[in-house]
Picture 1: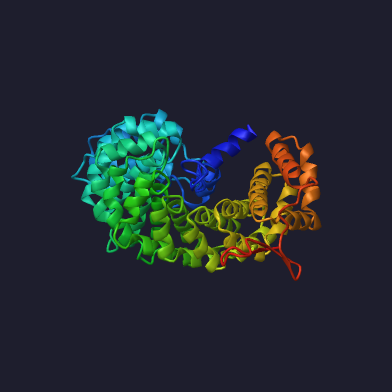
Picture 2: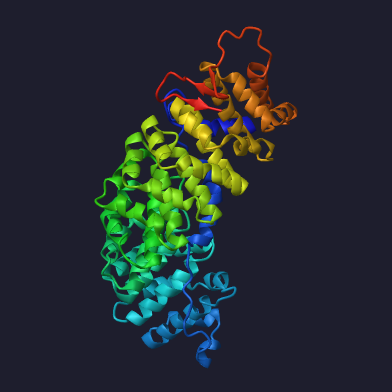
Amino acid sequence: MAERTHTSRLASYKNAGHGATELRRKRAELSVTLRKQARDEQLLKRRAMSPEAGEVLDTEKLMTPAEIVQGLKSVDLAVKTAAARAGRRMLSREQNPPISVMVNAGVIKPLVDALDRDECQDLQFEAAWALTNIASGTHEHTMAVINGGAIPKLVSLLARGGVVGEQSAWALGNIAGDGAAPRDAVLAHGALPALLPHLTPTTAPSQLRTAAWTYSNFCRNKNPLVKFELVAPALPYVSELLTVADQEVLADTCWALSYLTDGPNERIEEVQNTKHLLPRLVKLLQHKSPAVRTPALRAVGNMLTGSDVQTDRCLEAGCLDHLVALMHCGKPSLVKEAAWAVSNVLAGTQTQIQMAVDKGLLQHLVSVLTTEDIKCQKEAAWAITNLCLGGTPGQLDALISAGFLEPYCAILASPDQRAVTVVLDGLTQLMKAAAEFGQVEPLCIKLEEIGALDRIESLQEHENEQIYKKALHILDNYFVDQEDRNTQPQESADVYQFAPTEADGNINF
């Protein structure tokens, strides 16, 4: 199991010499954890609460679900509207709304029928609100709304705008947020074209917040991913929304971009090529609110898993400066994501790696290794391992100069088996480079001085087969006595160097 997991992560890399899509890691491993976090950061579904709770008339307090259904079937519009309002209020209870009771009482069909009553917008509004709250429940509740025929009617009302249109957008957002199949059903009925006029900076604030959140749910959910052509027409609107001041709108717009970029490079390409979008998104990495920075970082991080050209665009937009700041922001979830993003830069070309080195990112990675929790440390370790795999001798020298070795090797004592495996991979690559430049002995001495040798030796007894095999490989190939020492390292003032004759190839221990 451990071997299979580690192999799958390595296989999702991209760079020369390490497989077809090596080194840049897609988000598969983190996705489950991140989706759970996202429930707090961005709700899949939202239930509309009644602002007038506690002010319900006595006649409405006494209405049972059966009486509400009966009232909804009345030919009297006033009676029908009062019943819809009573039902909406019952479904808007803060604690334990009786959604199942209402569905079982047969409320959905008359509510859906009420959406057709254009002569009474109050009735349409109450019905749409009640359906919104039913769709905020379980998958079964949402499917009952879908099977009741609500989607095409809600899309029609959305296209008309106004308060009824806003409430219809909310209902459609709840339905789409239930999963891939409900999302696709909403989009198949033309919900995006109906929503687009609401996705503008000039839209009333309340309606714009609802529209942005609804669009994010149109882009959400995997297995399968949303058909890109069904949501891509909104990208120019999305680019404009990145300029508004409203934090809720910014957050939900960035969440939408994080979903759209979490997939094939072709999607990243279209997002990046949307006019003004990328620089506006990168700028939001410095937004004051973590609720905005988190999805913005996730979207940029997803782009950094793309092609070298796509990574270059992010670097040219100035993302590295923001990643440095995020690695010191004090919020562990953001530190972890920033280190993950940096790891994908360091999995890129040597030119991209050099840009990160020139920005001082190596020292900041060492800081994360030294001060953050194991989840953050593991992402920083991945970044360093990536540099070990693809960096030049000069870049390895910069890494060693940053003082990475001791905190990096300290992870060998971690109970996190993946983190241990990552560090062993990096050490193996570092030892290979040391052998190439006649630096094995000083590196071995340094590893012994910092206690890493003891840790590697102890890993020979590890229960994980891959870990003990990797540890054994290092010990057998680099820590055994060598009778033939034809290549002695050059020594100058107690400093050993890799490739000391190359201008860019000095690696000092």
